[in-house]
Length: 371
Length: 103
Image (cartoon, rainbow over all chains, first blue to last red):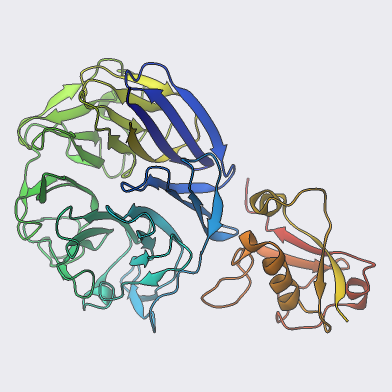
């Protein structure tokens, strides 16, 4: 019988939640790396025993961890993330030039085919790659140096590269997103990049239709249609059917289109999920009701999913990397909250239950579907 | 002749590096012992400590890490300054602390 392993990063350590395919009974293992901020934990699609974790601290900087046995044991790997050449400047919040300074890794994206190959999205925004299992890291500086970098500006959480989408059949195509610079794509394996923000409209920047400067919160795609992208922007839920060359808004009947997470059903490429958040100023659900919204039509038409979720006095947030789906026949949907709850729906969103309720604030959730 | 230096590390780093036992721990450093050479010796003996005390981009002390020797804050001295004799002769430990930055 299949199993699932949920990898949870929190403000004070990592947790590993495991269950059989029924996803009713769970065991909780952790905290791993207690006391450290774990921005992201993700397993290799090519070898599920290989897991990478980004561990950081305001005191002691960035550390990387690697497991080769499914999270039972860990070893520290390389943690030198050096910008290529003169790092230069980006814009600070007040528009003045500010030096590029490495702070932490927000997102890890292991290669689809090679367990030793892994990408890391950093704050201040840059994309790094390791081809030796995390021992050494090299910046793919074509992104930061392609021309618009000096105009990038941090979002409220910092200038983070938080989304990395690898194309399942074309290893040269990668889509990334940065708050608050926007989305970018390479079609040559990371040598050259271009902004892919046409169609995004952001009222909170001087030119609402600017080439860069949009606060993209997260992007997801389905492996069978990798060039169809779904985006949760600061405000607005968007989709693109041409790998980001043009975006259209699909917020439809959502009660608020602010939010952080977005994900796609494992077997239905037009079924997508978001968790609407009241506003950019009020980072909690509307009316104290924690509701996931599902669209079975790739956007525009949304239905609230509430069974098993708190429907009063709930004022948590769901951060951008804190939703994931498993690949079991009845697709499981997972998300974590800043209140320390991790919820699962084993039936595509119809019914929810908490796996665990009192973790530190959840920063990220990933799922591995195991044989 | 290498000098044994006693070092007290923050609990978070001891746990992170899997260092058993209690503070202080000993590292061997070729004279003249400096903060830089002690950090290098720590990182060599315990690779998990690499880049936790110094920023790898600048080589400078991390902003929330502090060094004390014989009751004196030496955090702002150059990392290649010689350490006091009481430290190099093992009578006093070198204290490495995380700055108090919580509530």
